[in-house]
Image (cartoon, rainbow, N blue to C red; front, side, top):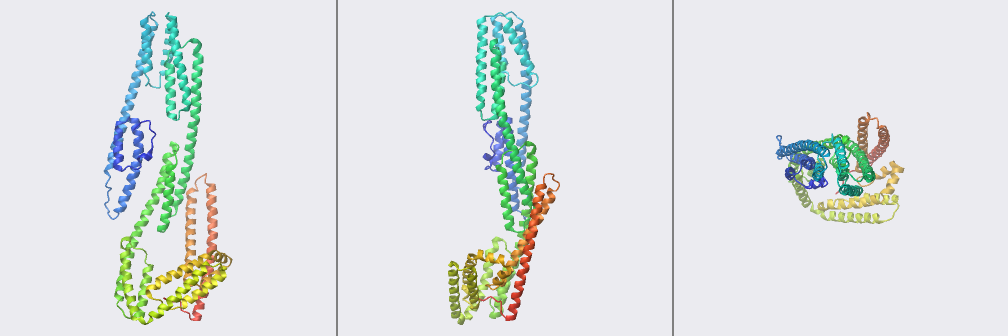
Length: 593
């Protein structure tokens, strides 16, 4: 693992908990600074996966009151690895500090040696000794921050004094200074090339290195001292100015990222504010919450000062949401078991009735049991098909026996079937026509009346023909739905009076009323959620606009509820008038076959 390699959390996402432990163990051979960076990434992914697997295993073993996660021991392992890495980091820091202290002391020794040489008569040996000191001085790089500038000042002073005060060969002296000048020119060129360096971190490492080498290089010809230093300093200043702009841009990006995450946090709070009442609502909100989390992970880093607080608030709302979801489905499972017991009781009842020959009375009883079956909610999935087949088999047994006993009606039922098939063809033709909606609705009314007047069809064809009729009827209704909707908006009362005359018109009105009540309930829940959110943000000094938006939404929703209630009043009056009319005319509302 290359220490210069850009850290990338996605490279660990596919690993299992055990593989993450192995990867963390493998970091022990890296330098402590590299190890801790990679470990922090692995650690976060480890704990996220650990919590997900623990929740999944707990869900699968929810009936076990003494649940203990099977991979609990891995927590101790990851903590031990972290302690070892931190210990190595601590020891490394102590070693570096000790090395810095020794290097600082060694440079002081070199300064004393250089001072002694400056005060001696010049010889070839003293020149070589000075060069050795220069070479060793350059090789010492790891130093404490305090005191090094004073050391450099003393070193520079002694070097200049040595070259200025001792009478050595002028050519040799100038040659050394010229070589130093050439090296400083080369350092200046290297400094200028850093402008193209992509990595800001590497750029500043190299910048400091070149400064250190420039200072540690010996004197140059006096006439070149100021020009080379000004050129070097200019290149250095340009690099710092250029890279500082990049650093500022990165910091600005972090601020933008913070704002994006704060918006996602607010959305998570709003999602979590209203508890869903059904599985569909839970599924919709779970999708919304998962989409928020996916978007969260795509956003880049934010300022360190805000990182922990924003994440704790976001993950806290997310965890609270999924805890409530878990509780909801736990209660649903309990209810499904109760539904299973109720359906098993119905199976017993219909099994007791299936051999009866009192066709009329028993038919009503079994139909009543079928209606009760429909009203009972879902059962656990693994029992659903089996319990349904058991119930359906007993019902079919009775009705098959009834059909055999009433074999004289078969021909009539076949004729009725052909008549109903003809009406379905009429509906299909009407669905393809370009009639005006009122004309189409009158035709639909007439066809529905004809359908109701036709008697029974063969029992095995009841579902098929009814489904085909309903499909054709819906096709006509859907085709003219926009025109009908316009008519409904223009005159609700007329719409409901027409609707009650259609097939199953009374049930259609009941369904309309249920839909309207459901809309009112959903809007009321939304108002409750908005009011909860208003109280949550009431203490915020910057939430004035948000609170005004909440108040506007609440006002609009209350007006919408008033309009829906008026629509329900109209519907109920139409339904009441229809029922009174049916009683007066002595018309039966029983469904035919």
